[in-house]
Image (cartoon, rainbow, N blue to C red):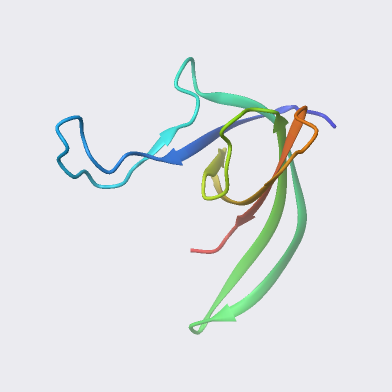
Amino acid sequence: MRLNKRVTLQVLGPNQDEAGQPLPADWTNFIANGDGKLWAEVRDVTGREFVAAGATQNLVLTTITIRYRAGVAAKMRVLHGADVYGVEAVLGQDQRTLALMCSRGVA
């Protein structure tokens, strides 16, 4: 395993401000300090092309491996360059690393 890529892990932010007023949902960095980036290994596992609603679309399944960090969960997202990955599942019972099973390419 080579953690040689810089990625940003994000979570959907709170839906209300300190006064309890509703806010539009927005993505915020999971790591608040520094640049918010983590070292990771990004590896495409499989890809396929399909036609939906008359347009060709691509689906890429990717495994992103990071060092163990408490609180990481499905429904977060990972930014790597111009790519946005949706976290579908988090694997890592050894508490040394986490394997984020992600999808890229579905709107």
